[in-house]
Length: 113
Length: 116
Image 1 (cartoon, chains in turn orange, green):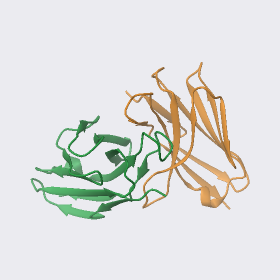
Image 2: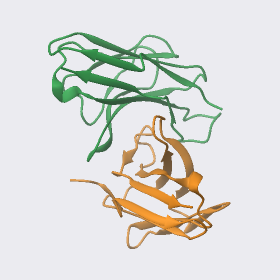
Image 3: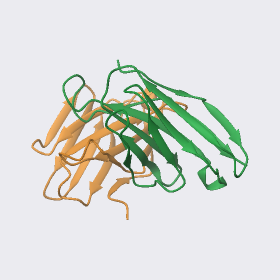
């Protein structure tokens, strides 16, 4: 049973468009949601994160929207660039859970120039 | 910037072989983690540790042992490797007290293991 679900599995957008990556979760004790970005041949790297006390977190072109009631969140990448082409993982953890993260299966984003 | 290194970067072994994957972090992080990454399964936690001599079982521990010898070094051991353990292995570290933002995990570059 996948505790963290991501959709779509893959996404292609044109340069300059907004890419929207979705994530949902099951466990209501989850209160920390990082998004990791992974390029081929590299390890994942933290991109942006949000805690459940907030409904929005913005960092440049990257924004997380969080809906606690529906247990859903989304990552919006505005003005997408070819360099944003990567796999994006949504993850979740609960306070006091020793930092243990549960990862989704990822969304592979391709930005066409 | 946190630094996590892994060795070897690539490894080929045969079924029943003995494999040790190494990870070192130089940021005095408390926690270290071993993950495997497989298509269709994402990243799955094998073992983790919150300090030298400590070991915690993750979500997919079967067939794996681990040992944390120092604050910096965390090893993953496959004593009787099987083809099902062919995967991309990542080590990560995090500081849950002070230092880096809580819960942020810093990943190494990965070790690709092939078990024939």
